[in-house]
Image (tube, rainbow, N blue to C red; front, side):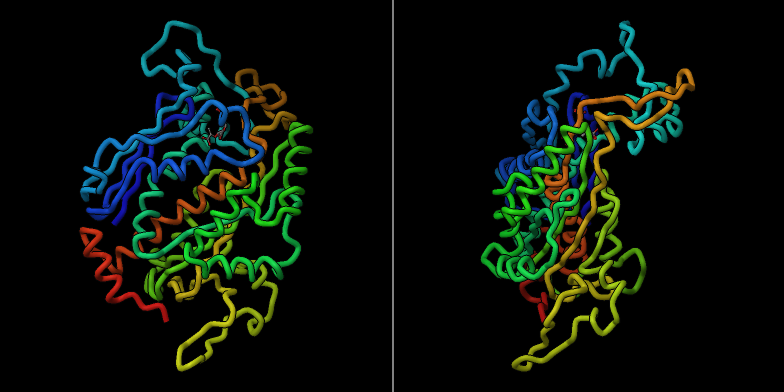
Amino acid sequence: MLRLLTAGESHGRALVGVIEGVPSNLELSADYINVQLHRRQQGYGRGGRMKIETDKVKILTGVRHGKTLGSPISLVVWNRDFQNWGSKMAVEPVDAEIEKIVIPRPGHADLVGRFKYKHEDIRNVIERASARETAMRVALSSIARKFLAELGIKIGGHVFSIGGAAYKTRDKLDPMLERMIKSKHGAEEISLVSDESEVRCLDKGIAAKMIQQIKRAKKLGNTLGGVVEIFVSGLPIGLGSYVEFDRKLDGQLAQALMSIHAIKGVEIGEGFRNATEFGSDVHDEILLKNKKIIRPTNRAGGLEGGVTNGQPLWLRAAMKPISTLMMPLRSVDLSKMKSVEARRERSDFCAVPAAGVVAENVVAPVLANAALEKFGGDSIEEVRARFEREAFFG
Ligand code: EPS
């Protein structure tokens, strides 16, 4: 089974990560991982930091001659910005007086982190609570994504809404997504196309509205959130389990998505809409076509009873607007216990397109673990042979 661990402060020397449990003989290069890192850095609405960083991973261990060894794989991504932070982020004690941050930003981890870890300087909270961590999470998770791709399981996604700019109906969107999922790239086709848009939106008209909304937010010193959709194709029936709560795949996927910074809502299929409808309009009928079972709809999002049902997996994640505002909300100076405006700090205005890339990647270790649980093996050859022999798609 896969285990992942990330470490690193946003403006510290580097982000580092370890992934353990990857089968041996999987072809892996830094270039493959860097594609995902590059995708994560894109998107209209990012702030100044993305102009400084060009995230590239160095594989330190676990790979030899382009193939995984079955041993822990460790990665490093150097923070270019570190050199601009000098003594502020030094590991060693420094003589210079470093200004302490004492005003928490509402919505960030600043206030809770200050009290929980007894940090007098909120900088100590900001650094690890930052969404910079997702760079390493994407890097590690992309290895699980590569493993899944070997089995023909492909992941893709697009941005469904930013602020008020959203698809009004799914009438045109759903048939287009269905066509893409059936293409030779599977669900990954959705990403290949959406990546051509600055906001990763498949509809040019809606994309233009999203950009307008971000521009307006930026002008006002404000921020915007949105909703991303993720699809996974090629999943056989039977990944996950209904027998015990912590083995339910829907719960595990929700955890992975919810752990992304600023994600505050997760939906599987038409989760929230289904809650407003009669059961007869919600559940996907089981029909026979040429003696084969088919499902005419996929409102369940590819999961029934916490188990994959052979339909494409369909997930949504809602991101709140970024908490750092140039038009700050009210807060408290904790050193003087005085009401003040929250601190302004360089940040992004909208990171929804990037969050979509993060979401695509973080579901990969969850699915890879479920696949390893069912078709496990120590080498990719062993897993592939079991998968080819036993995977049932209905
Ligand atoms: C972030 C603040 C900004 C973002 C950052 C997340 O960074 P900085 O404080 O250096 O301007 O750009 O995201 C990343 C660095 C990244 O790689 O995604 C925050 O406070 O969460």
